[in-house]
Image (cartoon, rainbow, N blue to C red; front, side, top):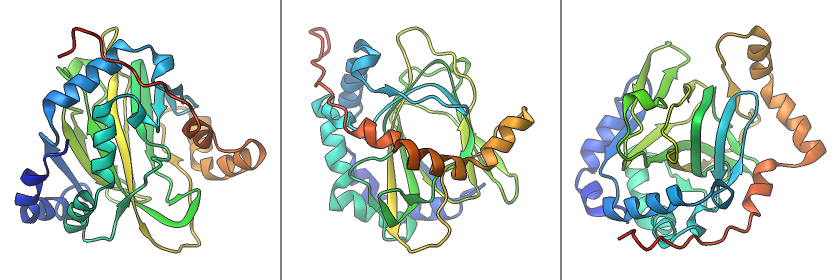
Length: 272
């Protein structure tokens, strides 16, 4: 599924681009995978009911978003993508680009298929620092594959990234078959505004997270930086403590999502 040969031929160029990127280390790779097979998977997603694709994951800081960490059960194309992500070949590419001994989380905790319906949003935030089930797994890198065929600027949903140290920022269009490798640190802030996708289409992406092994006594959950409402901003700053209390009382919602039994969606007859 992944265009491995094209990536491997460009390793020096990709490494330099990642390490010198502004506002912080990131890399945009277009034509990342087999476009025809990705379109086939995308048509299957667009034809299926939301209840077959994942669970709604709304809170104060994100709205109208569905996610499914077991996306690879939906169709053969996603299964192959999942296997490619976990392969030594892709691991070696990520390590060559970043210079870190990273590996993809096979359970896709917090990741997998992400769907934003019309009027979805994701407030600016920095990601959790360590895997909740593996305290020595440091979240090093977001691996985001966008699947928005025929995306138009008026649909919204472009990713905003900002360095919290310098306030330098940029916008990244979520184009079809575009991979974004993005370093994850406490200062790598990102999110997107309200979307306006047509009926039957979603802001679609596959999110995988790469970790390396690091011990730390400063483990943090997602930290939110919403604009506007001061009460909402205060909650965002204290979100780590609030999530810790909620998890102790009620358990992890992401763990419950991983236990979903998702039926494989058969392609409609008119999908070639």
